[in-house]
Length: 130
Image (cartoon, rainbow, N blue to C red):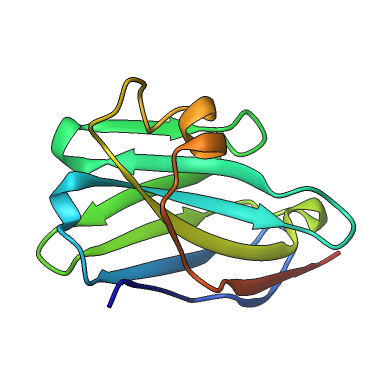
């Protein structure tokens, strides 16, 4: 059974940091890119970051570039999202997803995050107080 389980969300003050984790199981981790998404109430889901560890490729949306860092521990089949300098507008439910790497397009890209994800986690909430 494929599972993606997020953890690490919570309440943080503006300017603070959180590290989210995405633990994957049930599929061959090296064959997939892992993306992070967020959705705030009343807003569309936003793909914010992606890592394809076997290709050494990462992607960041402009809204988080320079503040968030994605990393992968392949031995643990886990992807992390280090979030620094959090702002109230970063508050959302954060989810991870897995997309097969080998496609006709780069999975770790804005397009890949929008159309190339195959499996989804349930999400972890992040609240940022001002």
